[in-house]
Length: 232
Image 1 (cartoon, one colour):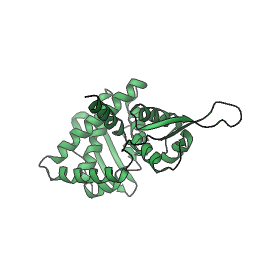
Image 2 (image 1 turned 180 degrees about the vertical axis):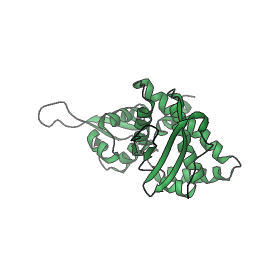
Image 3 (image 1 turned 90 degrees about the vertical axis):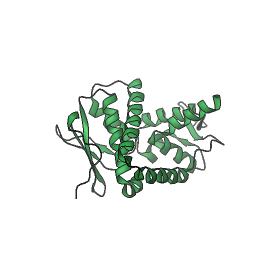
Image 4 (image 1 turned 30 degrees about the vertical axis):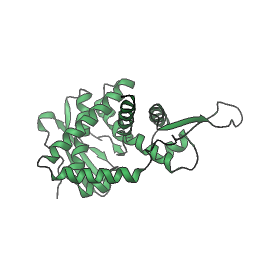
């Protein structure tokens, strides 16, 4: 039972895209890495990186030690993959994700299942975020969550405007099985907003309007569509 709890905790930690990206960077490195180095590698603020690293260490996926001191000041912390964790193979995870997405796309209600899974994921991410830092601005918090997940989001430039997503962390899968992968992403955003108690929703996701741009449209909850949509 204890082994199962430990495994489930690891899986929950790895459900965060940013934590999975950090673990991948650590697994690729032949030496321990510092917070700022990892921050530059994954494009996240150092404080955000520290929080994710703490969770990886607590889950037994990474180890932390102290670098030899250089001059005055507090010695820097360094991180590495926990030896024997068996979780540092991103190729295997991408292959598994591809197989699951393809199978899900074959189901009669594959998009609905993808939306439900994404909403559960989004609620979990938002719940974790509000536990550490409550907020009254749901759009701001959603943008923060999307940024941590690797979507490189841009907040709406005007009231009622879309959230602009400049990167898809699952781009290859999204182009092969867009209805499922984009459905998960749409559900993620809806779940996060509902967990945050927002009075509005992401009513549709418009993927790849440009090679590096997807649009998440905001509106009243009763306007929400069943899944991601494509124009053109």
